[in-house]
Image 1 (cartoon, rainbow, N blue to C red):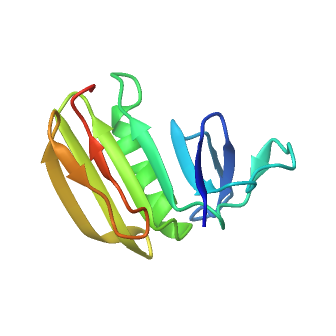
Image 2 (image 1 turned 120 degrees about the vertical axis):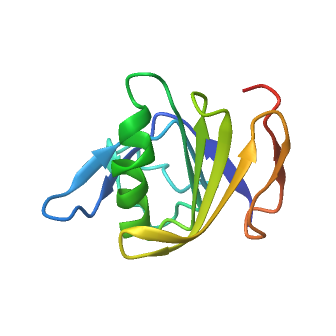
Image 3 (image 1 turned 180 degrees about the vertical axis):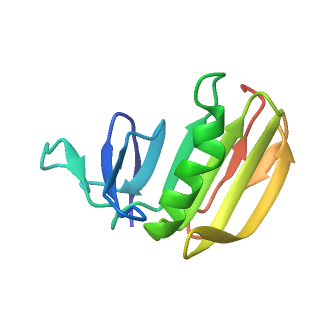
Length: 125
């Protein structure tokens, strides 16, 4: 299937008690997944979400969003942690966590799970 990257996509995720609404820095999903022009979308077609930390969002990106993405069953969460100098690839969502996490130094080639079919060059971060 043909994949596309999206920015500015609002996702409604199942929360521990309420719905959590987030706008990831990047979403990868099949082409046409968000053609309906709605403001908030179910996470069902999403294959990967990416967050790039900033000083004001790092804590939320590392903990709350990671839990929310796992709870929603999103297959891959890529965290570009600029403060730590790392790219963290989380996959295998189960409950509030991901079963597999691999940590890579920024500036290296980061292999992504096979369902995405590419390696990410993090030299630009």
